[in-house]
Image 1 (cartoon, rainbow, N blue to C red):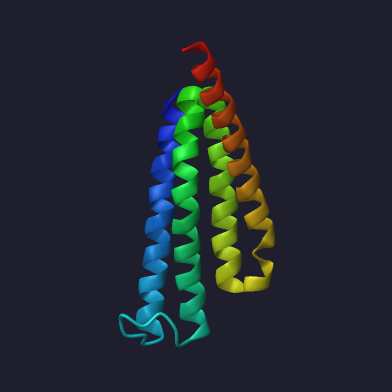
Image 2: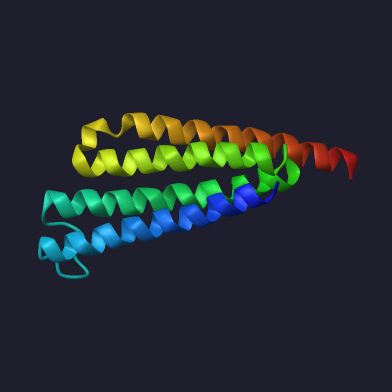
Length: 131
């Protein structure tokens, strides 16, 4: 069931594109000239959502694929990946509207990520012991 992690990867790319699009739109709306990254709270929220999503994706994608290929298989890795994706989407929308409300999405995404880390860790150690 390696297709589910592949779908999650594609959806993650779309989430990254969405955060980039929102940031670019906010840059125009609030007249923030590049390379500035501050100036209006609406732009700064969009920019932080984009950067936080990129930062989390760097940690997420490797463990998604390690869990899928060495851990508990594509189905469970994909489900945990979907949890991460839902959490990150919730986080992004909440942060854009009210930064103080982003906690729930953060927790959900971290639970999905932590599950992947555990699956990947067990799988890699098991593969090292067998192989």
